[in-house]
Length: 265
Image (cartoon, rainbow, N blue to C red; front, side, top):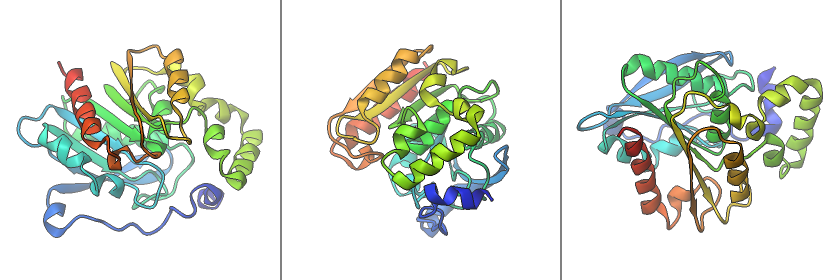
């Protein structure tokens, strides 16, 4: 049933996943399958950091066919591991290698974080989510039992309505679902629940001035609601969920590493 209801939103992205890693690269990663309260089996990959290990970073992917391969095909894992961080990448339910569950994607984030606590106990846990992986993290962070210590939220929309309004059919389906589930609508309103975030020491928001899907004004609305220390980093020119492929790439990666390092001081 969930797969059918999700089709207007994610149908074109829920496809067979292809691992982009070479044979040698696969040796660095260990697969874990985690049970989520979204009623799905979440598939993730864990790689140890290099040199002295400082902590573990969980990476939450944007919406798309690549799922966790979005990170595996980029420089994120290498940069983090070289700077002493374990890395855990995963597929949200219905994406990649994970089974399909409910719309409560935030439970997937919590389940993965709890698994990381088992894999690497006594180490701080950071999170970096982009777009889809960022918006659902905000809701995850309002739960009392989430295990994260600090987080980067990149290109997150303030509400699902403001994101899906650019996609007319999906938007109509969303509005219909909200009529049936008014309490759930309130539960997953990112901007209204931002002041309920718990346990985090701080947060870094990352946005692009030329992103017309999640403009900087959304970040400013989050900041007004925040009850925790929060920093905003804005790049001048990058498409939505594509700062890693923009001319700001080096400065952007440096900012990410510096933020995580500063949380451990």
